[in-house]
Length: 259
Image 1 (cartoon, one colour):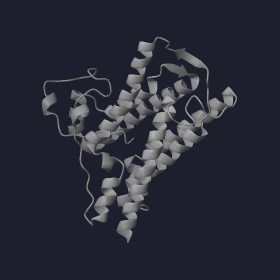
Image 2: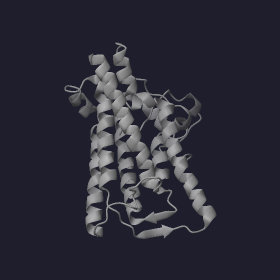
Image 3: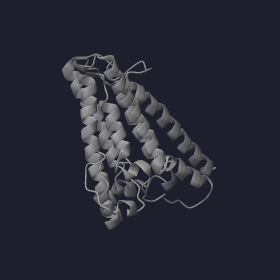
């Protein structure tokens, strides 16, 4: 019975994540959802600014603190190892849902691209960014990243294990393609309002901090293996960073936006 409950818990957490994630895409782009970053709760600009900053800070703190190894070691004293990742996913989805629900609009237009070919090009970039995000999760281990592999392994009664640190496809071009996709999607706005600009700016600052924290943890865990990977592959901008002739021989490595 415990194994079945574990499997159901992981599946429900994953399904809730999918719902919130798909809604978040529409929220950022203002596509097909009743409430978006530009069409949200109306209030004074100062209240909107303070509330939105508090919501984004809450998401950043939850997302980053729960991803740290020290927190995981403490957390798994109380949460069984097979559902640790699913619990993280569930908590992150809940906080993101709160952001989407309680967001306040700042409708002042910062820029508005009116030339239609340029607008279309920006929309293509927007969808390309989300495509990079989704593809990047499958290039490492999508179902492990979101906790399904762990609960399925527990259901089968097998010992837990990690996929390990590896690079595939996009991860041979930049170390954090998942974050690159998010940044492209957040900033690709043909009409940029103050609310969208706030969302993009704060999340960009958090992503930079999250990458630094993640790489610090990976260096502590993997040492020279990850250091060699950093020497040959740029962090987030393709072609910008140190590379060497040993790029084809770099170690199997895994990098994700778990921070």
